[in-house]
Length: 96
Image (cartoon, rainbow, N blue to C red; front, side, top):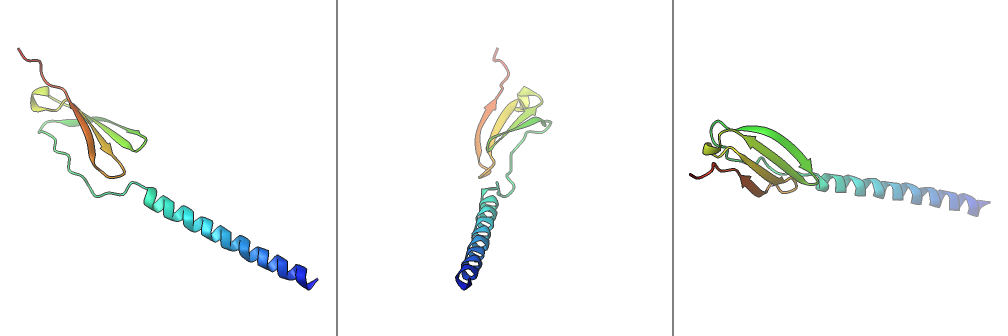
């Protein structure tokens, strides 16, 4: 009977310890897995506005609107993990 009590106590300690390690592992992954970066500066010509945003996986897609002559017609893709600009697509007025 003593051995059974000892076994139950040891198993309870192992279960609690395992749950504690699981909670710690989840908390550290959620903390480091979140997109944490400082504010990024995205130069935008005067008169341009943000027309829309979309999140796709770890990327933020920004669509700007305004006069093409000012460089407003563009789409910018930002990596949300690092805050780095991955690319830009700019619309230009047709040349005559």
